[in-house]
Image (cartoon, rainbow, N blue to C red; front, top):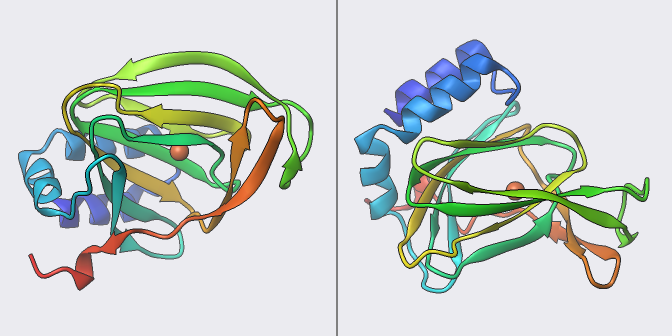
Length: 182
Ligand SMILES: [Fe+2]
């Protein structure tokens, strides 16, 4: 299924605003072979674990396992576009926008926009540059998510709402599928 998903994404283009790409992502997330693969990937308690499935110049695909209580702090996506679908479980997404006009690390003003609870097959899409979010597993169950970044994200910013600041983060996967012996 992942191979089919990759080939389909290459065909339609991986940009998250493309309806076909979101339809393909949802179909992949609902496929039992994807959740079966995710359950074989490395898992770490109390945090989320990112495994890179595929990377090419235009996009990268990752599967994430979110332990109960795991969260990603408020962040942007390095001016790239990002979308993910829920494979299993329920994930909380708190949406923010950067409103100070800045583009780098240092002082940064952000405002809360809204929030959502996403369940199996639902999609979160980050299309505009300053669409920020905090993502958290506030449930008692593990959550699995399938992500597409277009283009691959290398550097991004992490935001501190209370201090009106942000700092540079680096986007490295915890594991790479090709290096795992499954
Ligand atoms: Fe994100």
